[in-house]
Amino acid sequence: MQNFFSSLLFLLFFLSSLPSFSQYNQANIWYFEGGNGINFNTNPPTKTNDNVFSLGRISTICDNNGKLLFYTDGMTVIDKNHKKMKNGENILGHAEHIIVPFPQNKNLYYIFSVNVYDSTRSFYVTEMLRIDTIKFGWNEVEKKRGLYNQKTSSLYYHIVDMSKNNGLGEVIEKNKFLYKKIKVDLVVARHANNKDFWLISHEFMTNKFKVFLINEKGLQKNPIETEMGMKFYDESNIYAHTVRDFKQNTMAISQNFQKIAFYDKTHKKIQVFDFDNENGKITKFVTISIEEHLKLGWGMNLEFSPDGTKLYVLCNRYLMRVNEKEIQKEASATIFQYNLLENDIEKTKKSKGFYHNNPTINRKEDVPIGDFRIAPNGKMYFIKCNRNMIGSISNANNDLDSTKIDKEGLKFEKQNMGDNLPKVAHLLPPFYNPIKLGDLFQREILFETGKYDLKTWHYPILQDIVKFLKENPKTTINIFGHTDNEGNAEANKTLSLQRAKAVESYFMAQQISKNRIISEGFGDTKPLLENSTPENKRKNRRIEFLVK
View: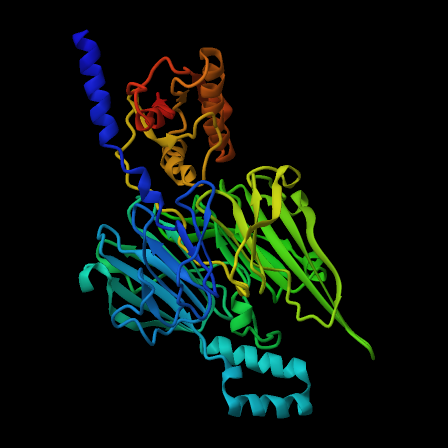
Protein backbone atom coordinates (compact mmCIF):
# COMPACT_ATOMS: atom_id res chain seq x y z
CA MET A 1 0.00 0.00 0.00
CA GLN A 2 2.86 2.38 0.83
CA ASN A 3 4.43 1.71 -2.57
CA PHE A 4 1.08 2.40 -4.20
CA PHE A 5 0.73 5.81 -2.55
CA SER A 6 4.38 6.64 -3.33
CA SER A 7 3.79 5.84 -6.98
CA LEU A 8 0.56 7.85 -6.98
CA LEU A 9 2.28 10.86 -5.44
CA PHE A 10 5.04 10.63 -8.04
CA LEU A 11 2.49 10.50 -10.84
CA LEU A 12 0.60 13.46 -9.38
CA PHE A 13 3.84 15.44 -9.19
CA PHE A 14 4.72 14.43 -12.74
CA LEU A 15 1.28 15.42 -14.00
CA SER A 16 1.39 18.79 -12.26
CA SER A 17 4.75 19.54 -13.87
CA LEU A 18 3.28 19.22 -17.37
CA PRO A 19 2.60 22.49 -19.22
CA SER A 20 -0.92 23.83 -19.28
CA PHE A 21 -3.21 22.61 -22.05
CA SER A 22 -4.48 26.17 -22.32
CA GLN A 23 -1.27 27.31 -23.99
CA TYR A 24 -2.84 26.37 -27.32
CA ASN A 25 -5.60 28.94 -27.02
CA GLN A 26 -3.78 32.00 -28.37
CA ALA A 27 -5.56 31.80 -31.74
CA ASN A 28 -9.02 30.99 -30.36
CA ILE A 29 -10.75 34.26 -31.33
CA TRP A 30 -11.20 35.11 -35.00
CA TYR A 31 -12.59 38.41 -36.26
CA PHE A 32 -13.70 39.36 -39.75
CA GLU A 33 -14.13 42.52 -41.70
CA GLY A 34 -17.57 43.91 -40.95
CA GLY A 35 -17.66 42.94 -37.27
CA ASN A 36 -18.38 39.19 -37.20
CA GLY A 37 -16.26 36.67 -35.34
CA ILE A 38 -15.82 33.06 -34.17
CA ASN A 39 -14.98 31.85 -30.66
CA PHE A 40 -13.05 28.55 -30.70
CA ASN A 41 -13.03 28.29 -26.90
CA THR A 42 -16.36 26.48 -27.24
CA ASN A 43 -17.09 23.16 -28.90
CA PRO A 44 -18.57 23.54 -31.42
CA PRO A 45 -17.28 27.06 -32.15
CA THR A 46 -19.75 29.86 -31.54
CA LYS A 47 -20.37 33.15 -33.30
CA THR A 48 -19.39 36.35 -31.51
CA ASN A 49 -21.33 39.57 -31.48
CA ASP A 50 -18.48 41.86 -30.45
CA ASN A 51 -18.25 45.48 -31.52
CA VAL A 52 -15.24 44.81 -33.72
CA PHE A 53 -13.32 47.79 -35.04
CA SER A 54 -11.79 46.97 -38.43
CA LEU A 55 -11.21 48.22 -41.94
CA GLY A 56 -9.86 44.97 -43.41
CA ARG A 57 -8.18 41.66 -42.58
CA ILE A 58 -7.65 41.21 -38.85
CA SER A 59 -4.86 39.54 -36.86
CA THR A 60 -5.78 38.51 -33.31
CA ILE A 61 -3.97 37.26 -30.22
CA CYS A 62 -5.41 35.72 -27.04
CA ASP A 63 -3.95 34.84 -23.65
CA ASN A 64 -3.34 31.25 -22.53
CA ASN A 65 -6.98 30.91 -21.54
CA GLY A 66 -8.27 31.96 -24.95
CA LYS A 67 -9.34 35.44 -23.82
CA LEU A 68 -8.78 38.22 -26.32
CA LEU A 69 -5.78 40.50 -25.68
CA PHE A 70 -5.79 42.75 -28.76
CA TYR A 71 -6.05 42.73 -32.54
CA THR A 72 -5.05 44.83 -35.55
CA ASP A 73 -6.17 45.49 -39.09
CA GLY A 74 -2.68 46.63 -40.07
CA MET A 75 -3.51 50.30 -39.64
CA THR A 76 -4.72 50.47 -36.03
CA VAL A 77 -4.07 48.32 -32.95
CA ILE A 78 -7.28 47.70 -30.98
CA ASP A 79 -7.52 46.52 -27.36
CA LYS A 80 -9.82 43.85 -25.91
CA ASN A 81 -12.53 46.46 -25.30
CA HIS A 82 -12.53 47.28 -29.03
CA LYS A 83 -11.02 50.70 -28.45
CA LYS A 84 -7.91 52.08 -30.10
CA MET A 85 -4.89 51.00 -28.05
CA LYS A 86 -2.68 53.73 -26.66
CA ASN A 87 -0.27 54.81 -29.42
CA GLY A 88 -1.98 52.27 -31.68
CA GLU A 89 -2.82 54.56 -34.60
CA ASN A 90 -1.00 55.12 -37.91
CA ILE A 91 0.44 51.62 -38.17
CA LEU A 92 2.11 50.81 -41.49
CA GLY A 93 0.96 47.41 -42.64
CA HIS A 94 -2.43 47.22 -44.31
CA ALA A 95 -1.36 44.58 -46.86
CA GLU A 96 -0.20 41.83 -44.45
CA HIS A 97 0.26 41.46 -40.70
CA ILE A 98 0.73 38.80 -38.03
CA ILE A 99 1.19 38.83 -34.23
CA VAL A 100 3.97 36.83 -32.53
CA PRO A 101 4.53 36.43 -28.76
CA PHE A 102 7.88 37.60 -27.38
CA PRO A 103 9.60 34.37 -26.21
CA GLN A 104 9.66 33.93 -22.43
CA ASN A 105 7.96 37.28 -21.80
CA LYS A 106 4.21 37.14 -21.16
CA ASN A 107 3.71 40.90 -21.66
CA LEU A 108 5.44 41.68 -24.95
CA TYR A 109 4.18 40.94 -28.47
CA TYR A 110 5.52 41.69 -31.92
CA ILE A 111 3.31 42.80 -34.79
CA PHE A 112 4.99 42.21 -38.15
CA SER A 113 3.43 43.95 -41.10
CA VAL A 114 3.91 44.69 -44.78
CA ASN A 115 2.93 48.09 -46.11
CA VAL A 116 2.32 48.69 -49.81
CA TYR A 117 1.69 51.99 -51.55
CA ASP A 118 -1.32 51.06 -53.66
CA SER A 119 -1.11 53.30 -56.68
CA THR A 120 -4.89 53.15 -57.16
CA ARG A 121 -5.27 55.37 -54.08
CA SER A 122 -3.58 58.33 -55.73
CA PHE A 123 -5.81 60.45 -57.99
CA TYR A 124 -2.80 61.68 -59.93
CA VAL A 125 -1.43 58.21 -60.52
CA THR A 126 -4.90 56.86 -61.30
CA GLU A 127 -5.38 59.56 -63.96
CA MET A 128 -1.98 58.71 -65.44
CA LEU A 129 -2.97 55.03 -65.49
CA ARG A 130 -6.17 55.94 -67.33
CA ILE A 131 -4.19 57.83 -69.98
CA ASP A 132 -1.61 55.02 -70.21
CA THR A 133 -4.40 52.45 -70.59
CA ILE A 134 -5.73 54.29 -73.64
CA LYS A 135 -2.21 54.66 -75.06
CA PHE A 136 -0.57 51.30 -74.23
CA GLY A 137 -3.38 48.91 -73.28
CA TRP A 138 -4.46 47.43 -69.96
CA ASN A 139 -1.84 44.66 -69.78
CA GLU A 140 1.08 47.09 -69.92
CA VAL A 141 -0.51 49.29 -67.27
CA GLU A 142 -1.05 46.27 -65.00
CA LYS A 143 2.62 45.39 -65.33
CA LYS A 144 3.74 48.89 -64.41
CA ARG A 145 1.33 49.18 -61.54
CA GLY A 146 2.16 45.77 -60.07
CA LEU A 147 5.89 46.37 -60.38
CA TYR A 148 5.59 49.72 -58.63
CA ASN A 149 3.52 48.27 -55.80
CA GLN A 150 5.95 45.43 -55.16
CA LYS A 151 9.06 47.57 -55.35
CA THR A 152 7.64 49.84 -52.66
CA SER A 153 6.41 47.03 -50.35
CA SER A 154 8.25 47.14 -47.01
CA LEU A 155 8.42 44.99 -43.89
CA TYR A 156 7.94 46.67 -40.50
CA TYR A 157 7.68 45.58 -36.90
CA HIS A 158 5.86 47.04 -33.90
CA ILE A 159 5.93 46.06 -30.19
CA VAL A 160 2.96 45.91 -27.82
CA ASP A 161 3.44 45.85 -24.04
CA MET A 162 0.37 44.39 -22.30
CA SER A 163 1.60 45.44 -18.84
CA LYS A 164 0.88 49.08 -19.76
CA ASN A 165 -2.37 51.04 -19.43
CA ASN A 166 -3.89 48.82 -16.71
CA GLY A 167 -3.58 45.69 -18.79
CA LEU A 168 -5.14 47.14 -21.94
CA GLY A 169 -1.71 47.47 -23.55
CA GLU A 170 0.30 50.14 -25.30
CA VAL A 171 2.23 50.19 -28.56
CA ILE A 172 5.70 51.07 -27.26
CA GLU A 173 7.46 50.86 -30.65
CA LYS A 174 5.96 51.13 -34.11
CA ASN A 175 6.80 51.40 -37.80
CA LYS A 176 10.33 50.04 -37.34
CA PHE A 177 11.66 49.33 -40.83
CA LEU A 178 13.28 45.97 -41.63
CA TYR A 179 13.64 45.77 -45.40
CA LYS A 180 12.14 46.87 -48.70
CA LYS A 181 10.91 44.98 -51.76
CA ILE A 182 9.23 42.06 -50.02
CA LYS A 183 6.79 39.54 -51.41
CA VAL A 184 3.67 40.34 -49.45
CA ASP A 185 3.24 37.14 -47.45
CA LEU A 186 4.45 36.29 -43.94
CA VAL A 187 4.37 33.05 -41.97
CA VAL A 188 5.68 32.13 -38.53
CA ALA A 189 7.32 28.85 -37.50
CA ARG A 190 8.15 27.47 -34.10
CA HIS A 191 11.86 26.90 -33.52
CA ALA A 192 13.00 23.31 -32.97
CA ASN A 193 13.86 24.23 -29.36
CA ASN A 194 10.11 24.80 -28.74
CA LYS A 195 10.82 28.23 -27.26
CA ASP A 196 11.78 30.61 -30.06
CA PHE A 197 10.16 31.53 -33.38
CA TRP A 198 11.06 32.17 -37.00
CA LEU A 199 9.48 34.91 -39.11
CA ILE A 200 9.67 33.75 -42.72
CA SER A 201 9.54 36.22 -45.60
CA HIS A 202 10.63 36.32 -49.25
CA GLU A 203 12.14 39.01 -51.42
CA PHE A 204 10.23 40.15 -54.47
CA MET A 205 11.72 39.36 -57.90
CA THR A 206 14.41 37.06 -56.44
CA ASN A 207 14.56 33.49 -55.16
CA LYS A 208 15.78 34.61 -51.72
CA PHE A 209 14.11 33.79 -48.42
CA LYS A 210 14.77 36.07 -45.46
CA VAL A 211 14.17 34.35 -42.14
CA PHE A 212 14.32 36.30 -38.88
CA LEU A 213 14.96 34.63 -35.52
CA ILE A 214 12.89 35.79 -32.54
CA ASN A 215 14.35 34.59 -29.23
CA GLU A 216 14.48 35.69 -25.59
CA LYS A 217 16.64 38.65 -26.66
CA GLY A 218 13.99 39.77 -29.14
CA LEU A 219 14.03 40.11 -32.90
CA GLN A 220 17.40 39.38 -34.51
CA LYS A 221 17.49 41.91 -37.31
CA ASN A 222 20.12 40.19 -39.46
CA PRO A 223 18.08 37.53 -41.28
CA ILE A 224 19.21 34.10 -42.36
CA GLU A 225 19.12 34.19 -46.16
CA THR A 226 18.64 31.20 -48.42
CA GLU A 227 18.45 31.29 -52.21
CA MET A 228 16.22 28.42 -53.27
CA GLY A 229 13.61 27.83 -55.96
CA MET A 230 12.61 30.02 -58.88
CA LYS A 231 12.38 33.80 -58.98
CA PHE A 232 8.94 34.98 -58.02
CA TYR A 233 8.56 37.54 -60.78
CA ASP A 234 10.60 39.39 -63.33
CA GLU A 235 9.99 42.72 -65.02
CA SER A 236 9.14 41.11 -68.33
CA ASN A 237 6.31 39.07 -66.80
CA ILE A 238 4.75 41.08 -63.98
CA TYR A 239 1.11 41.92 -63.53
CA ALA A 240 -0.51 44.04 -60.88
CA HIS A 241 -0.49 42.67 -57.37
CA THR A 242 -2.54 45.27 -55.62
CA VAL A 243 -3.86 45.19 -52.09
CA ARG A 244 -6.77 42.99 -53.18
CA ASP A 245 -4.42 40.42 -54.70
CA PHE A 246 -2.38 40.27 -51.50
CA LYS A 247 -5.44 39.07 -49.62
CA GLN A 248 -5.09 35.64 -51.20
CA ASN A 249 -3.41 33.09 -48.94
CA THR A 250 -0.53 32.45 -51.37
CA MET A 251 2.04 31.36 -48.77
CA ALA A 252 1.42 28.66 -46.19
CA ILE A 253 3.43 26.72 -43.61
CA SER A 254 2.61 23.27 -42.26
CA GLN A 255 1.74 22.82 -38.61
CA ASN A 256 4.81 20.67 -38.08
CA PHE A 257 6.83 23.62 -39.49
CA GLN A 258 8.63 21.39 -42.00
CA LYS A 259 7.02 22.58 -45.25
CA ILE A 260 6.38 25.95 -46.89
CA ALA A 261 4.24 26.36 -50.02
CA PHE A 262 4.09 29.31 -52.42
CA TYR A 263 1.73 30.11 -55.25
CA ASP A 264 4.05 31.23 -58.06
CA LYS A 265 1.84 33.00 -60.60
CA THR A 266 4.74 33.88 -62.88
CA HIS A 267 5.76 30.30 -63.64
CA LYS A 268 2.26 28.89 -63.16
CA LYS A 269 3.51 26.59 -60.42
CA ILE A 270 3.27 25.95 -56.72
CA GLN A 271 6.65 25.65 -55.08
CA VAL A 272 6.88 23.42 -51.98
CA PHE A 273 9.98 23.91 -49.83
CA ASP A 274 11.48 21.95 -46.94
CA PHE A 275 12.18 24.17 -43.93
CA ASP A 276 14.67 23.35 -41.19
CA ASN A 277 13.23 24.95 -38.07
CA GLU A 278 16.46 24.33 -36.18
CA ASN A 279 18.68 26.60 -38.27
CA GLY A 280 16.15 28.61 -40.29
CA LYS A 281 17.36 27.31 -43.67
CA ILE A 282 15.37 26.24 -46.71
CA THR A 283 16.86 22.91 -47.76
CA LYS A 284 15.12 21.78 -50.98
CA PHE A 285 12.02 22.30 -53.09
CA VAL A 286 9.70 20.66 -55.61
CA THR A 287 7.24 22.25 -58.04
CA ILE A 288 3.64 21.44 -58.90
CA SER A 289 2.20 22.63 -62.20
CA ILE A 290 -1.02 24.62 -61.85
CA GLU A 291 -1.93 25.05 -65.52
CA GLU A 292 -5.20 23.20 -64.90
CA HIS A 293 -5.89 25.24 -61.78
CA LEU A 294 -5.54 28.53 -63.61
CA LYS A 295 -8.12 27.41 -66.15
CA LEU A 296 -10.54 27.14 -63.24
CA GLY A 297 -9.97 30.66 -62.01
CA TRP A 298 -7.60 33.41 -60.92
CA GLY A 299 -8.05 33.04 -57.14
CA MET A 300 -5.55 30.71 -55.48
CA ASN A 301 -5.35 29.88 -51.76
CA LEU A 302 -3.03 27.36 -50.11
CA GLU A 303 -3.19 25.46 -46.83
CA PHE A 304 -1.70 22.31 -45.33
CA SER A 305 -3.64 19.55 -43.61
CA PRO A 306 -3.30 19.55 -39.81
CA ASP A 307 -0.75 16.71 -39.87
CA GLY A 308 1.28 18.34 -42.66
CA THR A 309 0.98 15.41 -45.05
CA LYS A 310 -1.44 17.00 -47.53
CA LEU A 311 -1.39 20.28 -49.44
CA TYR A 312 -4.71 21.87 -50.38
CA VAL A 313 -5.12 24.35 -53.23
CA LEU A 314 -8.41 26.23 -53.45
CA CYS A 315 -9.19 27.80 -56.83
CA ASN A 316 -11.90 30.32 -57.63
CA ARG A 317 -13.48 30.97 -60.99
CA TYR A 318 -15.41 34.12 -61.82
CA LEU A 319 -16.94 34.77 -65.23
CA MET A 320 -18.94 37.74 -66.48
CA ARG A 321 -20.87 37.78 -69.73
CA VAL A 322 -22.33 40.97 -71.13
CA ASN A 323 -24.88 41.30 -73.91
CA GLU A 324 -27.31 43.99 -74.98
CA LYS A 325 -29.94 43.17 -72.36
CA GLU A 326 -28.21 41.77 -69.31
CA ILE A 327 -25.07 41.01 -67.37
CA GLN A 328 -24.56 37.37 -66.38
CA LYS A 329 -22.09 36.42 -63.69
CA GLU A 330 -21.05 32.92 -62.78
CA ALA A 331 -18.78 31.71 -59.98
CA SER A 332 -17.41 28.33 -58.88
CA ALA A 333 -14.69 26.85 -56.68
CA THR A 334 -12.57 23.73 -56.96
CA ILE A 335 -10.27 22.23 -54.34
CA PHE A 336 -7.14 20.20 -55.14
CA GLN A 337 -5.28 17.91 -52.75
CA TYR A 338 -1.68 16.63 -52.99
CA ASN A 339 -0.04 13.90 -50.90
CA LEU A 340 3.34 15.24 -49.76
CA LEU A 341 4.55 11.81 -48.60
CA GLU A 342 4.84 10.47 -52.16
CA ASN A 343 7.92 10.92 -54.31
CA ASP A 344 5.97 12.30 -57.27
CA ILE A 345 3.65 14.75 -55.54
CA GLU A 346 2.06 16.01 -58.74
CA LYS A 347 0.71 12.56 -59.62
CA THR A 348 -1.20 12.35 -56.33
CA LYS A 349 -3.52 15.20 -57.35
CA LYS A 350 -7.18 14.83 -56.49
CA SER A 351 -9.86 17.43 -57.09
CA LYS A 352 -13.41 18.19 -56.06
CA GLY A 353 -15.72 20.93 -57.24
CA PHE A 354 -17.71 22.08 -54.25
CA TYR A 355 -19.32 25.38 -55.12
CA HIS A 356 -21.15 26.61 -58.17
CA ASN A 357 -23.85 29.21 -58.60
CA ASN A 358 -26.04 29.54 -61.64
CA PRO A 359 -25.61 32.67 -63.74
CA THR A 360 -27.22 35.60 -61.99
CA ILE A 361 -28.68 38.62 -63.70
CA ASN A 362 -27.94 42.18 -62.68
CA ARG A 363 -26.56 41.24 -59.26
CA LYS A 364 -23.34 42.40 -57.72
CA GLU A 365 -21.49 39.13 -57.35
CA ASP A 366 -17.96 38.45 -56.20
CA VAL A 367 -15.76 35.35 -56.36
CA PRO A 368 -17.43 32.65 -54.23
CA ILE A 369 -14.54 31.78 -51.94
CA GLY A 370 -12.03 34.12 -50.34
CA ASP A 371 -9.48 33.12 -47.70
CA PHE A 372 -8.87 29.50 -46.77
CA ARG A 373 -7.24 28.72 -43.42
CA ILE A 374 -6.80 26.06 -40.75
CA ALA A 375 -8.39 26.72 -37.36
CA PRO A 376 -7.56 25.67 -33.78
CA ASN A 377 -10.15 22.88 -33.91
CA GLY A 378 -8.39 21.22 -36.85
CA LYS A 379 -10.98 22.15 -39.45
CA MET A 380 -10.14 24.19 -42.52
CA TYR A 381 -12.41 27.22 -42.97
CA PHE A 382 -13.21 29.22 -46.08
CA ILE A 383 -15.10 32.48 -46.37
CA LYS A 384 -17.74 33.28 -48.98
CA CYS A 385 -16.79 36.67 -50.27
CA ASN A 386 -19.01 39.59 -49.36
CA ARG A 387 -21.53 37.24 -47.78
CA ASN A 388 -22.35 36.43 -44.15
CA MET A 389 -21.23 32.83 -44.38
CA ILE A 390 -18.26 30.62 -43.39
CA GLY A 391 -17.82 27.05 -44.67
CA SER A 392 -15.49 24.33 -43.43
CA ILE A 393 -13.66 21.15 -44.40
CA SER A 394 -13.37 18.36 -41.82
CA ASN A 395 -11.10 15.28 -41.76
CA ALA A 396 -8.51 17.12 -43.84
CA ASN A 397 -5.81 14.56 -42.97
CA ASN A 398 -7.70 11.99 -45.03
CA ASP A 399 -7.76 11.53 -48.77
CA LEU A 400 -9.93 14.15 -50.43
CA ASP A 401 -12.76 11.67 -51.05
CA SER A 402 -13.03 11.09 -47.28
CA THR A 403 -13.13 14.75 -46.28
CA LYS A 404 -16.38 16.42 -45.31
CA ILE A 405 -17.23 19.80 -46.81
CA ASP A 406 -19.79 21.95 -45.05
CA LYS A 407 -20.57 24.72 -47.52
CA GLU A 408 -22.69 26.82 -45.18
CA GLY A 409 -21.41 25.96 -41.73
CA LEU A 410 -21.81 29.30 -39.94
CA LYS A 411 -24.12 32.13 -40.94
CA PHE A 412 -23.73 35.57 -39.41
CA GLU A 413 -26.19 38.41 -38.90
CA LYS A 414 -23.88 41.12 -40.18
CA GLN A 415 -23.51 41.24 -43.95
CA ASN A 416 -20.48 41.88 -46.16
CA MET A 417 -17.71 40.05 -44.33
CA GLY A 418 -15.23 40.80 -47.07
CA ASP A 419 -12.98 38.03 -48.35
CA ASN A 420 -10.43 37.65 -45.54
CA LEU A 421 -10.02 35.20 -42.69
CA PRO A 422 -7.86 36.28 -39.75
CA LYS A 423 -4.10 35.95 -40.00
CA VAL A 424 -2.89 34.08 -36.91
CA ALA A 425 0.35 32.35 -36.05
CA HIS A 426 0.19 28.56 -35.89
CA LEU A 427 -0.25 26.87 -32.54
CA LEU A 428 2.71 27.35 -30.25
CA PRO A 429 3.59 24.33 -28.07
CA PRO A 430 5.58 24.60 -24.85
CA PHE A 431 9.07 23.45 -24.06
CA TYR A 432 9.36 19.89 -22.74
CA ASN A 433 12.06 18.17 -20.70
CA PRO A 434 14.38 15.89 -22.72
CA ILE A 435 13.23 12.35 -23.43
CA LYS A 436 15.13 9.67 -21.48
CA LEU A 437 15.37 6.04 -22.54
CA GLY A 438 13.41 3.70 -20.29
CA ASP A 439 11.37 6.44 -18.60
CA LEU A 440 7.60 6.47 -18.90
CA PHE A 441 6.51 9.96 -19.94
CA GLN A 442 3.42 11.85 -21.00
CA ARG A 443 2.55 14.75 -23.25
CA GLU A 444 -0.79 16.48 -23.12
CA ILE A 445 -2.37 14.20 -25.69
CA LEU A 446 -5.83 14.15 -24.11
CA PHE A 447 -9.10 13.11 -25.73
CA GLU A 448 -12.77 13.96 -25.59
CA THR A 449 -15.08 11.36 -24.05
CA GLY A 450 -15.54 8.44 -26.40
CA LYS A 451 -13.21 9.96 -29.04
CA TYR A 452 -9.84 8.86 -30.41
CA ASP A 453 -9.12 11.44 -33.13
CA LEU A 454 -6.09 13.71 -32.79
CA LYS A 455 -6.62 17.48 -32.72
CA THR A 456 -4.60 20.25 -34.36
CA TRP A 457 -2.79 21.13 -31.15
CA HIS A 458 -1.59 17.54 -30.75
CA TYR A 459 0.67 17.61 -33.80
CA PRO A 460 3.23 20.17 -32.63
CA ILE A 461 3.30 18.43 -29.22
CA LEU A 462 4.24 15.15 -30.91
CA GLN A 463 6.92 16.74 -33.04
CA ASP A 464 9.63 16.66 -30.36
CA ILE A 465 9.06 12.90 -30.02
CA VAL A 466 9.31 12.52 -33.80
CA LYS A 467 12.53 14.55 -33.75
CA PHE A 468 14.00 12.35 -31.01
CA LEU A 469 13.09 9.13 -32.85
CA LYS A 470 14.67 10.39 -36.07
CA GLU A 471 17.84 11.41 -34.26
CA ASN A 472 17.98 8.00 -32.53
CA PRO A 473 17.05 5.55 -35.28
CA LYS A 474 17.82 2.42 -33.22
CA THR A 475 15.19 3.22 -30.61
CA THR A 476 11.64 1.87 -30.40
CA ILE A 477 8.59 3.48 -28.82
CA ASN A 478 5.66 2.06 -26.89
CA ILE A 479 2.40 4.00 -27.12
CA PHE A 480 -0.07 3.35 -24.30
CA GLY A 481 -3.68 4.45 -24.65
CA HIS A 482 -6.01 5.00 -21.69
CA THR A 483 -9.64 5.91 -20.96
CA ASP A 484 -11.70 7.08 -18.03
CA ASN A 485 -14.30 4.77 -16.46
CA GLU A 486 -17.22 5.84 -18.67
CA GLY A 487 -18.65 2.85 -20.56
CA ASN A 488 -17.95 -0.87 -20.21
CA ALA A 489 -14.52 -2.41 -19.86
CA GLU A 490 -14.45 -4.11 -23.28
CA ALA A 491 -15.42 -0.93 -25.14
CA ASN A 492 -12.84 1.10 -23.20
CA LYS A 493 -10.15 -1.44 -24.08
CA THR A 494 -10.96 -0.98 -27.77
CA LEU A 495 -11.16 2.81 -27.47
CA SER A 496 -7.80 3.06 -25.70
CA LEU A 497 -6.13 1.01 -28.45
CA GLN A 498 -7.71 3.25 -31.09
CA ARG A 499 -6.18 6.26 -29.33
CA ALA A 500 -2.75 4.65 -29.35
CA LYS A 501 -3.18 3.70 -33.01
CA ALA A 502 -4.09 7.30 -33.90
CA VAL A 503 -0.73 8.42 -32.52
CA GLU A 504 0.98 5.52 -34.28
CA SER A 505 -0.52 6.66 -37.60
CA TYR A 506 0.82 10.16 -37.06
CA PHE A 507 4.33 8.86 -36.34
CA MET A 508 4.21 6.71 -39.48
CA ALA A 509 3.10 9.75 -41.49
CA GLN A 510 6.26 11.46 -40.20
CA GLN A 511 8.38 8.62 -41.66
CA ILE A 512 8.83 6.61 -38.44
CA SER A 513 8.86 2.92 -39.35
CA LYS A 514 5.98 0.78 -38.08
CA ASN A 515 8.56 -1.79 -36.95
CA ARG A 516 9.71 0.67 -34.29
CA ILE A 517 6.23 1.26 -32.83
CA ILE A 518 4.24 -0.87 -30.36
CA SER A 519 0.73 0.31 -29.55
CA GLU A 520 -1.28 -0.98 -26.58
CA GLY A 521 -4.61 -0.09 -25.00
CA PHE A 522 -5.26 -0.46 -21.28
CA GLY A 523 -8.82 0.80 -21.15
CA ASP A 524 -9.66 2.20 -17.70
CA THR A 525 -7.38 -0.20 -15.78
CA LYS A 526 -4.53 2.27 -15.13
CA PRO A 527 -5.96 5.66 -14.17
CA LEU A 528 -3.63 8.44 -13.12
CA LEU A 529 -6.31 9.86 -10.84
CA GLU A 530 -9.57 8.67 -9.35
CA ASN A 531 -12.41 9.12 -11.81
CA SER A 532 -14.24 11.25 -9.27
CA THR A 533 -14.45 14.57 -11.13
CA PRO A 534 -14.77 15.67 -14.79
CA GLU A 535 -11.25 17.15 -14.65
CA ASN A 536 -9.73 13.91 -13.33
CA LYS A 537 -11.54 11.98 -16.04
CA ARG A 538 -10.18 14.36 -18.68
CA LYS A 539 -6.62 13.74 -17.48
CA ASN A 540 -7.16 9.98 -17.53
CA ARG A 541 -8.17 10.03 -21.23
CA ARG A 542 -4.51 10.16 -22.21
CA ILE A 543 -1.54 8.71 -24.07
CA GLU A 544 1.73 7.65 -22.42
CA PHE A 545 5.05 6.86 -24.07
CA LEU A 546 8.07 4.69 -23.36
CA VAL A 547 11.16 4.90 -25.56
CA LYS A 548 13.72 2.07 -25.42
